[in-house]
Length: 556
Image (cartoon, rainbow, N blue to C red; front, side, top):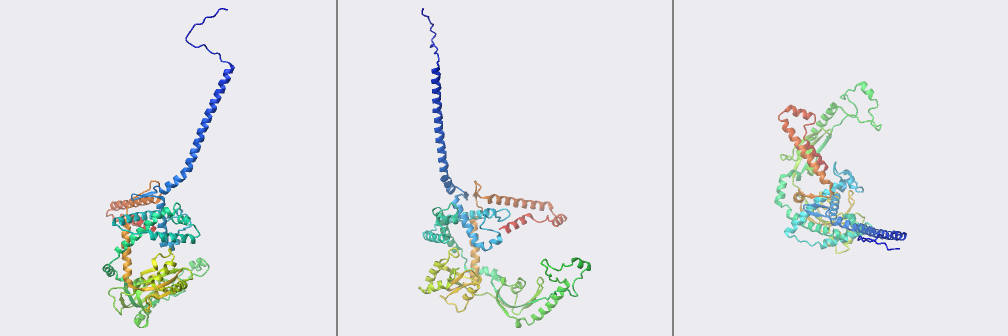
């Protein structure tokens, strides 16, 4: 067969695809697909592992950010969550120590969530303590800067060591570990190491505050000047007094108000109270007037013999006598032998009063060392002291040994310039005994107190009136000094942790709007007296700003 010629066109001859070729192609495609799927699975697996690692790793990272990140900024200072919690708990503890006895009146239940209990119409107790914490932070930061600027130096090592020892004892007494007890005291993120710098700083600031208080202690000239302006508060009077009560009728007399028969019948058993008991008879105005006239006559009679027949009341302060007779007794023009009869219309009585004298009581304040114990071991504590060196120094050691730091943290139990009016009556009587001498000791368990007092008498100090004025002036100066650090606080709260900031801003805006509205109403009212009277009758003439301020004061 002759050869068939082909024309060269520059292309390869077309290959015929057999079944075998198709089979091999399918196998290749399946292998490549399997390889791709394996690769994808491997990538996904790695991604899942990485994701899990990130999630697990994020726990310490988030914890780190919570502990060390910025919770809020106060006057340019970045405050971490741990530092804020520390100040929050310090502020709350201080508040509870000061007002704990009144918490039931405030409606505060410390066993419940503070953020669900209202401190005011707008703030919860949690909000209020947040606000106190910020004020504490601002004050402490300001004091620290001032102390360092002055070059104030104080070694906090001993204070911190004492704190650690007290912390261990407190944790043990509470049946807790130190670790858990620290969290209980200072917040969920607190540890000993984390709160250490804040504690040390608080010891430093406390020492500086004491130095400031020493500088602010008023001079004797300031004390004397204050007394001269407030003599009525500090002077005492001796006076005679009798009380004559009007004998009001307990059943109707001829001066009783007439009662309409039908009204009496309609009321039926109306004279009985809700519990079925008969209500007390309410005298008429005429009956009261007649009874008061008789009481006045008796009071006039007693006035003529008052100083001869009545017992003398001595060393009475104005705050301790009825306001009805106080102004008369403490009148600068009052002279020995003056007498008067004063009506008390509210209580239907007359006071017969005779003035004997006015003076400044020079009773001294006292220096004492005191151990307070809630257990029945007061005498045992004193006996322990007597069995030792039995000196003032050893008594101070006894005080430090037995005094509970949560009750009194005064070193050596020393109270300087204590006023007898500030201690239980039984202790005051012992201190005022004319035979009291330095080194005397006693154990006293006042009926009105939960503690037993183990006392060492150190000696007399300045007169009580001097010490009282000194304390008053010092408190005023320290309060003014500290308040300056808490004024115009710049708080940045980008994360919205401090709800009280927006609430206070809204209150300030509402108060400003009320003042503007009031001012506008006053300017529009002009001299239109009819309009003013109408507004007053409708209850619209009151100043909204004054109402707002009154509410704010009652909340505080």
